[in-house]
Length: 293
Image 1 (tube, rainbow, N blue to C red):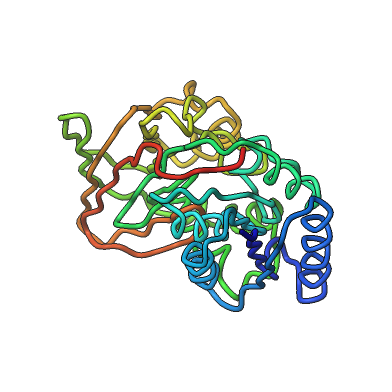
Image 2 (cartoon, rainbow, N blue to C red):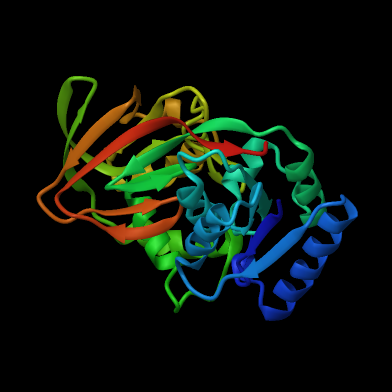
């Protein structure tokens, strides 16, 4: 049985030539381990999911995703609830999933790691019918994701996120939500709602510090805004492990939740932006994905 490696050619601001070199490297490393390799390069949004599903049908023993968290999400969605494990080769702007799972940052090291590591099962989250591996969110971070992924944004990586976030911090309005979780309903005006399977967004930014990929629960973080000035002052603490010391920031472990608003809600799934309706549902799928980590 072969190993399938799916490469996103634009992950992390790369291009066609970089993707070609990555494909050659992947083939050489896998061959050096005595395995058969098929390398695919994605051509459009959603293509990684299609390629991964085809690899499963053809009997690939392992499918690797070489790209950012969006690429990981597409491949994981195709492999979910199956016995085919996913390997991770990080090459995105944040790489939150790979960082938390201890995946080597270099391509060759990550490939060898995936081939030689015994797969383990981790949970998957779901929001609005879409699966996520690491983090989903409603509100401010979803708006940042939409701006960051816009064709007009030419800056990638951490700097790109910062440049997109700063103007939004001044202009983004809070929204009113009705949140139902663990048998309790609350009404709140929030800057953002994070539903986390893992503890970090990427680039070391950790919001849901107690989240674990294999505990059968999601960590929900709701950030109410007391004042915009206070939000601006405390934002660094929010994303670098000090959210529990911020007034108006609440944490809850959930297995399912619903979110309602008077207007359509913008949300993101592993950094990919979407627009949903006025009601969204979230839930956990314990042990739904095998990962080489």
